[in-house]
Length: 289
Image (cartoon, rainbow, N blue to C red; front, side, top):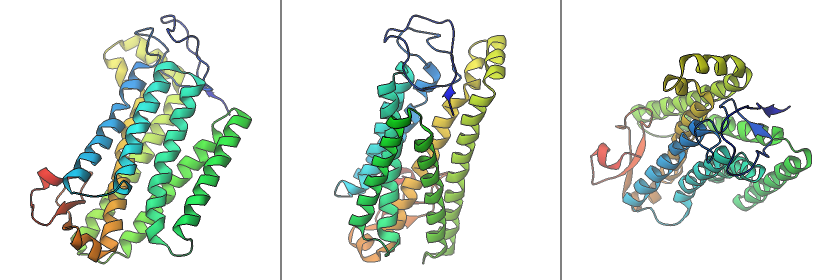
């Protein structure tokens, strides 16, 4: 199925004509010859901002090694890759965007399953995920479409929620902490579903949205660039699960968490209600992930 909405008018592209197989409802090069989809480009700042927030808090907590930081680095990488795609609409930057989505999801998926199940060894799990990535790449380049990538990304994202929710149910912790972890997981998937709804509406109701935007004009027309909400809502949802996975990962090994001087706190503000903090500090504002 083709997910391409052609656009007429606008500036002559500084980067040459679009070559991507995806094009969304925002009209191309409407404001500048250097950015194809301005709103869709700017809303990627949510990925970069939340990724930096995660790295800063990981540093404050004194977490060593690259593992805890990888999800946040992948989120920042996704923000830059998606910005490049929406600003240029080139096939090469489209591939960077779509595979950055998969890489971020695969990293969180691996970190979750490597400690939450015993049927598959971590090394085997890693090889399996790499093989799946290769399969998606072959399908993508072979068909010239993003259908397989979209199915794999969406399926893994919802499976993450399922596994997280199951782990929280079996988690040995205070009831208030478990309750807020469940609420955080529900909020995360709600953001993700809402983002998907915005993505679908942006595509299937594009003609109506474009006509409405032309009628009301800027700046209010920017509020109807629904693909941008996909970035915002999925950014919040994915970040929520990144935090949850790190909380569950450390909390599963009490000795490791104690030796690191960390504890779980449920004093965070919605939607990031549960987070890791050090045992000395009681300030959720200072340590809130």
